[in-house]
Amino acid sequence: EQDQAMQRQVKLAADVQRRMLPRSIPQLPGLDTAARYAPSFQLGGDFYDTEVINGQLAFAVGDVVGKGVPAAMIMSAVRAALRAYSQTSPTLTELLSKVNIATVRDTLESEFVTLFVGLLDPATKRLICASAGHDPALLFRPDPDGSLGGLAGFKIEDLGVPGLVAGVDPESFYEETTYQLRAGDVLVTCTDGIGEAMNFDGNKFTRQGLIDTVTGLLRLEPMASSQRIIEHVMWTLRQFSGVTLGNDDVTIVVVRVS
Image 1 (tube, rainbow, N blue to C red):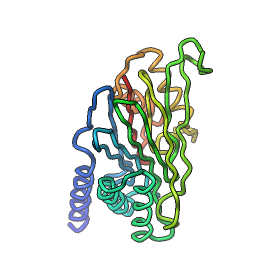
Image 2 (image 1 turned 120 degrees about the vertical axis):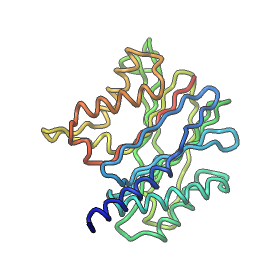
Image 3 (image 1 turned 90 degrees about the vertical axis):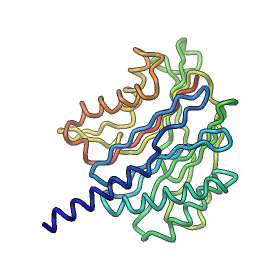
């Protein structure tokens, strides 16, 4: 009976955590945006968030070290800090600095979180992004004639921004970088649960596997929507990993520019 009561409490906590995710994804003119969150347990340490700030699409993807209940509690605190400071921080540099200080205050030395945040203007297609130790976002740009130096019809670029993980050093400085996107670009931001997913032979899906999956779909379906891209990535990941997919949380956000 005690075990059943505990399971009910965990389920309730998982329901609360799901409600912290955006109920709907903002769809601004010229931007097709979709996201997916798949925790390894009922409670997870990954998260994403999207909102509109001054007419621009603001988005964030985070990954707390560890999983289960402890990671979920830290995730909730970090997500709350992001929401609280996003409305009062004039730059992404200041936003991550404030979130980092709050995370340092609320966590142990062995606890930290990686974050990737972006601000995309649908009118100018200008993307400003910053990172706290998170894997770079991937930019897929159509290159049918190879004039951009791309392979397989696409130029693929890491949108990397240096920065220490949040929750370690309260004085960390976070740079922000600006990229000019254009029609046809596909931006993919995810947590390392995708690249580190393993099959029965112990082989990892890898970041290159993600790149091959997205480019393979875009070659067959050049106009594939963001939701279609995510569904294809998750299906391919499931085919690769089988039941072992549940070893780590998986979160992915895709933005397609038109």
